[in-house]
Image 1: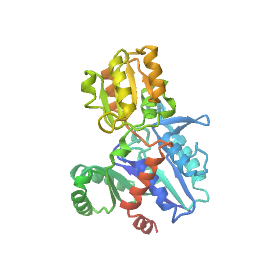
Image 2: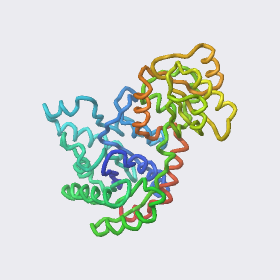
Image 3: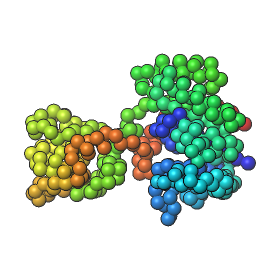
Image 4: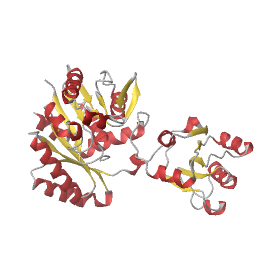
Length: 364
């Protein structure tokens, strides 16, 4: 019978998947055969003809788990799923799906990492909260939260109550994305605060801005916009966003390393400025990661030839500049299989800041 760790969070985007990724990397030194499953997924891709949660695809791609991808993600919450369930509940069918997939995922494994979806109560609307699923699979829980001291402790204690109601054992807590300038203070007080509530801290991980930076490929995919040129360079990182509503000489003061310029396609003066700046490295480090042309306007052919020769990814959106900038700002950046550098950073962070040996001891 394999050991089982259920990784939950206090809210979305606390870093469950990155913690799972880092834990698998570290625990492979101690457990030869590790399985992974995300029983209920909300963001899915089509893989091998199945709707599969994107986090399962990521883990499979990085570690080569050698499990049927559908069993790593048995239930995908597609549009209308909740309404259909409320009209016609089918808990027993969902439970059987999870149990059947888990049986396959855990076969001949020493350890199985189970990734939850959101906080302990997520899934209650269709009778399968994270706490319920953890109980169903007889797994011990690690709660992931992010930020500082007060809010994370409040949310963790609330989640603790939901897991305890299901008689699920909590191994401990990992605090993620702690600002470096507050790390020492948070590390000290969050440990004291959680200990008072009967919870041990297994790790405190500092915030790394690099992990939150999107690539041009991610922007293209999330905004669902067209690539006009520079497709081979879509994996460039974007560190800064500039909205082209200024004069070219003013734009030079803002274009920096790994910049994304968003501008109407008829602002050829700004396009030439960005292309020239990137080509000659004007003033300081000046690297344009990409350009999004708004308003569905494609520049003159001569400008496009220069853009193609530069290799800079040029994307085209039919929306106005403000709408495009807002969508880019609101992006939730998740690690993708091709993000090998980010994957390495995550593995190193978990290895350095999480007490993996303590987790192994608590599993025994």
